[in-house]
Image (cartoon, rainbow, N blue to C red):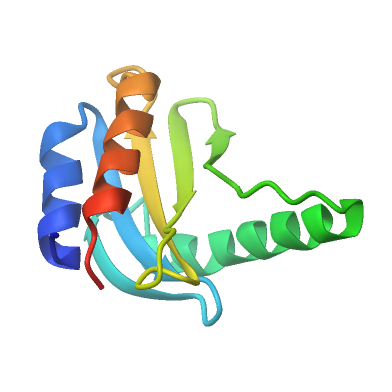
Length: 124
């Protein structure tokens, strides 16, 4: 098991093209930890905004009667990928990992794999 700080550092180090990472509580929209980002990428604002994305998807799934769980959500921009991965397990209920990637320098499949691995090892 790894802590939030260690998990975010690992993501930023291991994932090629990582621009920023956060662990977010989607019931409040608060980032419990952030790493990276910068002038053009305010991870606190992104965390709060992506909380709405998660809530909308969960609400839509409920309306459709879908019982599957969300594995991850991908948002593709011109030059970036934004990955949102809900944290499962008893210690992660209501949390999600958020990762922003430079589209030209990243391997999306490897980033998804690393987020899954991080989510399984995360201790909150």
